[in-house]
Image 1 (cartoon, each protein chain N blue to C red):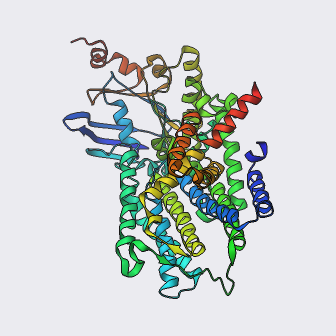
Image 2 (tube, rainbow over the protein chains, first blue to last red):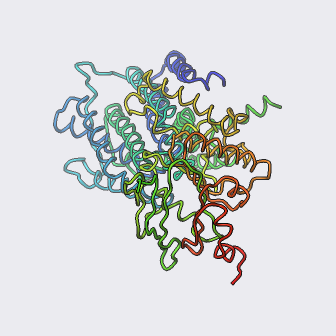
Image 3 (cartoon, rainbow over the protein chains, first blue to last red):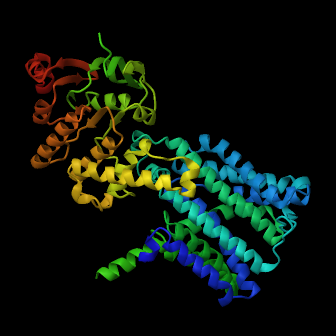
Length: 314
Length: 254
């Protein structure tokens, strides 16, 4: 736990775990699950900056993920752009969109902010499923493989290294941000917005900034996952997926970066583990989520940490 | 006439039909302790909220060193050297005590986006200095015992002083304290008095809203009295104490 508290301890520990994993669980299925966890974890780490640290809600982040995924699909598939250019353009485009909508949306608070972001996500999802000439409609569309300057990752293992590296990078960036004057300002906005403003924090700019960052995290993860799975569907941008992303942050532990990673792992693994239950899968899934929120309301990681501390003190 | 540090001219604020502050004019010269007093509901906190940018004036002017600042948001006023504390505490309970004070130093810190994201050494240096300075300020206001504490674990009296430390971290020229002694016992109030004196000695102009008349009379060199949103009187403590209108407003005499 002490290692986890130091600045780079957690990152080193995770890096070591990620290095060892392919040797412990090397088959394609397990690596595929690990890759999906990493994709979700990158998004959750970004979303946690917005929800956990800045205290703002977004029920539309799957929209940004969908935009990233479809931008890569369309630009590479229909217009033969190089993958890296499509990915960067998608990220820049989503950043611009997030920036433009953030100012009016983030003036809202609580339920109203939730409704506005929900609307944003729904618009994206509707456009993606209705513009079938461009997007293939509800059936989705195929995405060419990722070719980076002549190199194309083949198979789950090659992709695993890409996602693992990006996850570590995402965590590193998020932690740098949190442990800085900007991050303190963000957390102050959560704690007392008026106090933050009086202290000189431009709270609107602060919220816009973190909204854009979290949207870009989602867009990049979306682009890469589109190349990885080779297919995109409008479901990726759906409201349900947005809720799933928020659940990862909340269940892992708000304002805890590794909590977000844990939440992403849990939300990705559980359906796999429960798939044997067939009809009862969703029932048990929901029950597990409910019980864990009742027992550990601060989320898994902060809750477990608190429990360990009291046990050690006793 | 010399430009006042802060000048209010015919300042008014209405909420619907309620005239919370009406036509208040007042000059605050640099380097003195001022106090705003008045019965409950006289408009003292509304006046503070107007001056600190929490509310926008309905009419009138607020000038900081001659510059019109009425309607500017609080963060713009902080940039211009104006800071405040709150009657009902505004502490970030999700931060440590020290971090709360460091938030106050926000404007002084290196917070360029890319260097922050890549954690360049300059950011770490600027943050370490802020941490040391915040610790000094906590000792200065008498919160030295809580350097490692979570804000949420601190007692009320210490939180009131922590808010003052946060405001000081912004290095203000003029500091507004909204009922700093409310809820404090006699010992804590005496400590607070000493802290405010030391702040004034640093050359910071202090303006307080306060119900504790002993504190006000001890500290303030100039007092503004409000009643029903209007200026009732102003002057030195002795003048205000002798003013029949003020006595009437406080004692309810006709």
